[in-house]
Length: 156
Image (tube, rainbow, N blue to C red; front, top):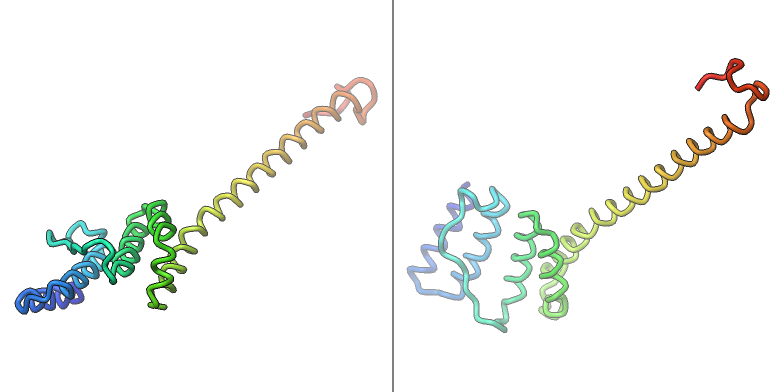
């Protein structure tokens, strides 16, 4: 909680010195930290960052929104924020933002890939099991090892 206390201290200082732009960036960071700590349930504050559209720092805000969406469990929205604003983030010239976006985008895509692989493996396993059962049934009815009468020692 000391990180939130420090952020709140700096928010108070920025409000005292009337630095709205820096305060908005700090509010954006505080909202992300609060989400990471407890999904904003106990540590959230009412003040929210408000940036005008086409603001030069908009890429930072979008990256933080994507991070928050990911950790809140809304991975589709995370992917949406990243895909919608990929060019702007790439052109921002801030390599750490681009690395963060690549990390979360890859992390978001990974479970879907693993899920698809597991589903395919389960489908293959189901086909294999059903073909084994089918061949066993076919074998036991058509080609009995014990002669024509299947009841002579063969038990299922």
